[in-house]
Image 1 (cartoon, rainbow, N blue to C red):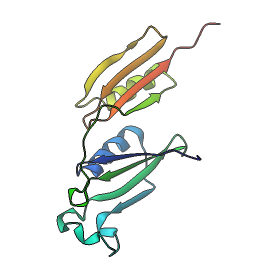
Image 2 (tube, rainbow, N blue to C red):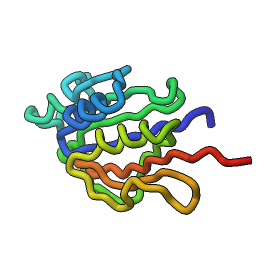
Image 3 (cartoon, helix red, strand yellow):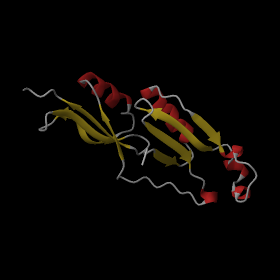
Length: 147
């Protein structure tokens, strides 16, 4: 296996979601296509005219391109149905406490806090929460170990 990428589906608000994360992380997309870009092939006729402006694929690299996050709108006309689960988290392991605070505050509007950003028994500054789009986040800063 050479690479693992992560793909998210959203209920027709992918551009809004992407723009929010772009404002937090300054990511730029590497590819954007809409359902209207799909060529006339078998199955394409099932896409409703009202859905053709939806995002079929948007992607951008993180961590110097080592991981690609991909996003798309769910089209119920093509069997897609978005159900937000609680089993996926993006874990940010940051270099400073200040960076942890910055990301925590930037991702905070509409959050459902599970563990507040605080010092832990495992010598870390840590938080766990869901953002306004239902994505789980863990932010972790490991304190330097005394040797």
